[in-house]
Image 1 (spheres, rainbow, N blue to C red):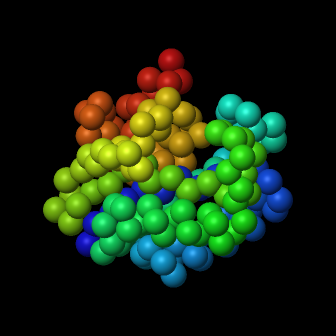
Image 2 (cartoon, rainbow, N blue to C red):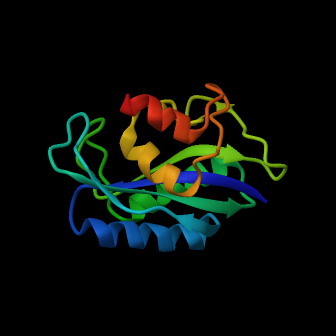
Length: 156
């Protein structure tokens, strides 16, 4: 089965509960959780005005990248996410970060609705910190650096 890293974030409502509900729905609709990072309280980016609670999970799935994207968007909708403005406040945000096929090779996926690896992940400690909790050795297939190396570059 393929493996993927999914970022979870929330800055509205009961943030911890939002992440737990999302994880349960991901198990129901996407695949098995193999690992869960620590949770991080982070500053907002963009139009958001409240702190976020962020985490990353490692999932095993038999679904395709687009099927996973559709499931994640459906979960966000089921949980009541309203998309008013880019990078605004939200009760739940689910993003596919990286993907490994069953052989363990990192894959790239590029189309209008989905880009893997996530195009901003290497610039965001709120993604890299939790990702490094569970997959520090995973290699970014475009930048050819491990997640831990990307994290260390941001800290310099």
